[in-house]
Amino acid sequence: MTRNRNALVRAGTRLWLAAATASLGLSGAHAGVSWDRVANIGDAAVRLVEMHRERGSQGVVKFLDACYKTHTLSSEFKAGLESCLAQDVMYARVLAEIYGRLPEEARARFNAPDAAGIERALSHRFALVMKQYAISDADAQALMRSIVTHGLPIFVKGVMPSREPAPPGADAKREPRDGKP
Image (cartoon, rainbow, N blue to C red):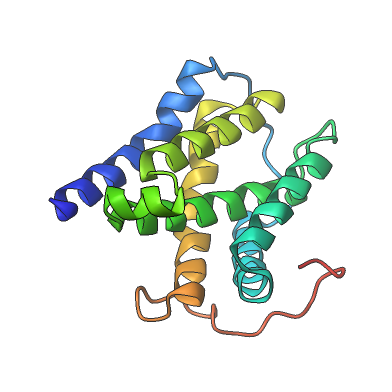
């Protein structure tokens, strides 16, 4: 039963971006980015691992809230907001996977959300940012693929070292960049 439920959660996560962007009627061309997206997402993953170790889950949630509040004030989609999105996606995906494995009774005891609720909330946040900056469906999906491909494995390895190997170079210690966590 748990295996089937987890498979359904994973299948649902692949579909949520398409559904979220379509439901909000997102359109408009995204002119591309002027930064190295893969490097930015990888760096965001490394910072997220460090933040999770230093501040715990509540610290990550507080940081992400402040990150969105700060970076969505800009009139342009910038690397900092892409980092917020990447960290949010990575954190929510891992949290949904963990909570998806807990029996309903255990989640109720801790007042923890279910995996589907976590995915819905993430989908909503992601879609709102895409709409605010008129990022096309294709560009939103490309961003999500980059986060899942280049960031998620680094974060997973950092918080669950025995789970999934990170891409080459992910073990290298990052030099601090502009005092960012």
